[in-house]
Image 1: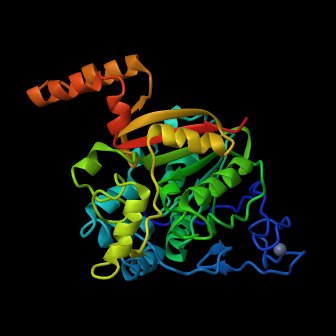
Image 2: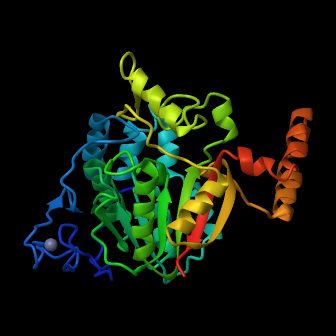
Length: 366
Ligand SMILES: [Zn+2]
């Protein structure tokens, strides 16, 4: 594609507040954007309103590659940049960044053309990109400068004028409460206690969930895409969020001791993050239910999602036997002996829930 001609700027109904003092702020497009109460200034960095001084890079590709992608996107368009610099060396990440299937879970959400969506930890922006044409407005929050800058180019060049990209931490969101219909945490909740260490991982996760609960309108929902702590893949040596196999299956104290011990000979490193203790908590279906209820959410709907939440080809609402039957009969055909065994095991009531690779959860603010 070629970069589209500049789309007319649209004033979006996004309520910002100062992450330093909590006072309401003028619109994101105001220049300069200064808090009237505490005088904190929130600058534009690489075309994105920046609410976070942190510049630690985190991403699926090295920082230098990401910077090349952005430079190329600015001159040749974001699609050309991805095709030239990401697709050849990182084909899986390319699909992850461009695939429309990334938002297939949204068919189970309550989105309408009037919805205001909050996409948290939005990375390269695929979810915002694919939801934007279907809703009124999207606010995309990403803390890594390079990734936020890529999104800004992507949305501007594709005429998605109803998306606002903000560079901000999930721990200091510059957003007024009660304004979103759907808040998305896709692959985010398990990481939030790595970037904030003032309390235990579960407490930090609860703190973030409570804040997101407050950002929703009454009747609004949070969507969470996340691994099952006891997913079958972890019994087959799949790496946990530490990069190591088996840590999610261990009791927390043991995973913690194991990572602490490894620090002395071979430190656990995953996606440029070093782990000296265990803070990337995931849970069982019941564990997520408890966590969300404790954070104030109601009507938790848990789907088993396969092969994983970034590629939601199959989603099955826990407890819906008819839906399970449909998938087993309609999708798994012809049947090998191995598939027949898998199918008969899937009929054991607690087994799919126990060993599901990932969950897709929706929970509502009353
Ligand atoms: Zn302020």
